[in-house]
Image 1 (cartoon, rainbow, N blue to C red):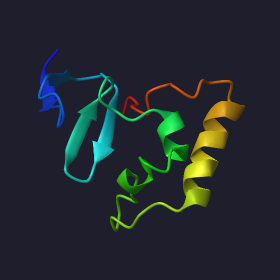
Image 2 (cartoon, rainbow, N blue to C red; image 1 turned 120 degrees about the vertical axis):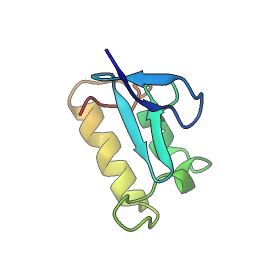
Image 3 (cartoon, rainbow, N blue to C red; image 1 turned 45 degrees about the vertical axis):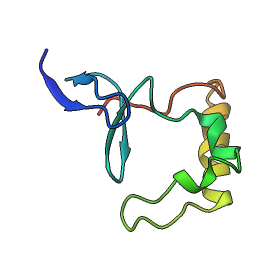
Length: 84
């Protein structure tokens, strides 16, 4: 496997096929990515933005992402990193 990126937070290489989380400033690895529970934490809320225009995600947008994740049978503390 070859590293595609370095994690914006921990600066460890992220290999092809590993889950990642997009940030406006770079890419986060699965360990450094936010969890779904952070979507509802008002102290973390300012960190969630729409990547297309960098506007803050609304409470309703964050709640919808969280609810969809939980409805699928997943856990609040799951990483938001995904495989492209």
